[in-house]
Every structure is written in structure tokens, then in C-alpha cells.
Image 1 (tube, chains in turn red, green):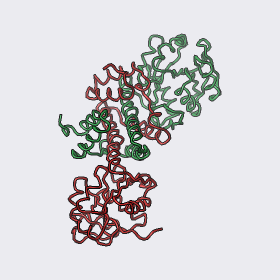
Image 2 (cartoon, rainbow over the protein chains, first blue to last red):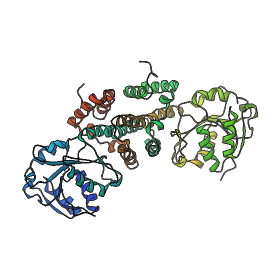
Image 3 (cartoon, rainbow over the protein chains, first blue to last red):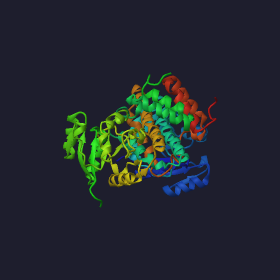
Image 4 (spheres, chains in turn yellow, purple):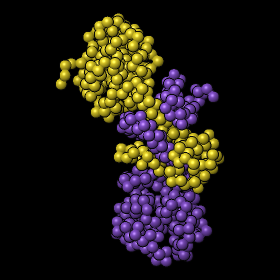
Length: 264
Length: 264
């Protein structure tokens, strides 16, 4: 389809592993894995059947893109070690939703972002084809190169600038971390009351499932949207007795779903 | 499998329709649909190929169970019209999570609850086999009859008393209504910022999907659980600028996921 694209992965954690596998499966060439711990570098390199190193000076110089897959806090310091790649005109990108591309600007002229909008908590294999990849690059030609790479692994490729990506990262926290925390709170409560959390699992699946065919606003149900104050008052009584810590959350949500329903 | 069980549905709304269809498909006999509006009664009766009426006096007297599928507020007044069924020793149940079985106690000796723990927002067909049915009855023999009926339509049948069902109903609001509202809030925000909500859909599906194989606590990700205060502060700055209304929710959730992370 296009001339071979060569990639070096900087990092060997969950993101590097998942990305390395799908990039490799899409026909791209992973030249090398760099990681400060040689064991992790070796482990991932074996999976990807490629070179590995823990020495910045030994980094492969023939790649088209260097993908930095390290924690947000480490991106600046790790990439600074590879500043010499800039003299060779190399493109460097990171995979962070919360970090601006400009984190590279002190050392690099060609830089960008390759952010898969997902949640990497588990070893569970995810279907990358469905994961939106948010791309950004200082130079338009580099964005085109990143698009070629991303389209090989996902059907959902978007150009998203730093500002919008930052906002999306916050939104991802709401829909992923916060909804999961709602499930955790209810799991804890039901367990305390010796009720099986299994009772709620189908409802959780259905809630998400509905959104494949409708907007969340149209899928909203429950006493707040119905204006069913009698039920809400019974719920507040249950919470006051059993889980007073959750009262502020219940009230905030109810108010947000249907303002002016609850007395202030 | 067992002698034929005859059912009358009181109500012709979403719950009566869904329940009528699956009960009928499971081989039970729906004798009649009662509804105060004859048009709705007729419509559902045609789907179920059964009798219908809008006159309480004309209710079929040969059913084993009378299932009241009306709004929570109407259960007491609607069922009072059928008090004469008690003289014939009939069993009456409702389908509400938030209403105690005792709502029937003034008029009925045999009463119970047949509560499918789900969210009935849409015309979307749901797979009832996966929906937990929470049963309760004053008399043990009636609970057994309800179990026979419920097992015909679902693999997940539980005996749940009024107290526990009330709690489950609150928990359902958290995992269904509140998580859906989180999606709505983000849909609104992204739309305001001219970003497609589509970007978040795969993440919503993945978040729910994970829970089929792990506990929500083990599935938790994000800056709060990582103790990543730098990212949290960047998020608070984005919200302060763009969506200050959401700051209290972000702070409450972050504190609840990882207490003592944010200054008080």
C-alpha cells in the first residue's frame, strides 16, 4: 500500500505492548524497543520479534517515527535523552491524552501526538479497530504519516489539537473512571448488605448497549427525569439511613438531571 | 412442565407489553389485558392474542396471578378497584422496585412482587433471559408460583424482600440513571465544543464490557486511582475555564476514588 514505515517504541509498558502488537499486525515494521529496564524491553521485543536496548545512544537511527509510550510525567525527561534524533530530522510522538505535543518543542522540530482514546487497565485484549485514535502533529506532512499508521490499526482516526484533546481526556475520565466508580460504590454497598453485585451487571451492560443506537439524553430514565419526587424522597431516606456519604452525590445528580426538582 | 398458569395483566404500558410478550412466549397463558384506556388495552391484547377490558368488574376471574404493571403512584388506587378478587383467593403482584408488597395489604391477603431489574426506556427489545427478576410474596406457596413463572422467562431469579429491593432500586439509579447522565453531560459538552460524541462511545462500551470479567474496583483506572495530582490539577483547570458547573462533581468523585488526594 505504501512504502514500509519503520517504528521505534520508547517504553515497554501496557501502551507500548498493545500498540506494538497491533502496529506489527497491521504490517508496519517495529525496528526496536527501548526501555530503561532491559528486562521489559527484551520481553516486549521477543513478542514483536525485534531489537531492543536500554541505552539511549544505541537507539535505532533508521526509524520514521519514535513513539514515546511512558507515563505522562516521564515524557519530557525520557524524550530529552533522544534530543540527538532531532539533528537527523526524526519525528517523535507520545500517546498521552493529557500532555500537549509541545512537551517535545525544546528538543524537537518534528513532533506530534498519537493518542488512542481508551482505558488500558487490563491485560484484556482490546479490539483496536474500534478505538478512536486522536492525532496531532506540528507539521502537516507528519500528520499525514501518522494518519497512514493509525488507519492501519483503527477505523476511527481523528485529527485533534492539544486543546480539544485535553478536553476529551477530561471527558474520558467522566464516562470511564467516574461511571466505573459508581459501579464500585454500588458493589461495595451491595456486598455490605449481602446482596450479589451480579444483580446489577445486566443493567450496566444494557445502559451502555442502549448508547449504540441512541443518544444518552434520549436514553435517560429514572425518577429524576420523570420528576417522581415521591420515589426520590424514598431514595433519600434509604441513603440517609444506610449510606449518608452518598447523599451529596445523589442530590447533585438528581439536580443536574432535573433542576429545581429538589428544594435547595 | 407444569399445569397451565393463567395470567391477567393490569396495565398496558411498556412493562405490561414487554412482560406480556415474554410470558406469552414462555408458554404461559395471558387471559386478558385490563387498562383504563380501552385503546391501549386492545392494542396490547392484539399483540398477545387475548381478551381485553377497561371495566374492573369485567376482569377475568380465572387467572392464577394478576400482574399490576402501572406507575408506582397508581398501584394502590388501581389495585383497590380489584379488591373483590381477594374474596376469590386471588394472588396480586406488582412490578415495581420502589414499592413495598404491603401496598396491597389493605385489600389482599395473597400478594407479592415481580420486579424485573432493568431500564425500560425504549421500544428496543431486551433479552429477558439476562434480566434479574426479583420476587417476593407474603406466602411461601405464592413465591414458588412466581418462581415458576419467572424461571420461564429469565435465568436470573432472586427472592428479594422489600427492604433489599428498595436498596437495589437506589443502586439501579446509580449504575443506570447516573452513569447515563454522565454520558449526557459529556455529550452536551463535546457538542458545545464541536467535538463528536462518537469519540467516547467505544470507551463507554469498553467500561461496561470489562465488568463482565472483573470487579469494578479492579477495573478502576484514571488519574484519581493513580494519585496523579498533576493531571487532576490540569483537569480542574480545564473545568474551571470551560465547565465550572462540573467542578463539584469532579472533586466529589476524585475524593471518593482516592480520599485525601485533593486538599479540603
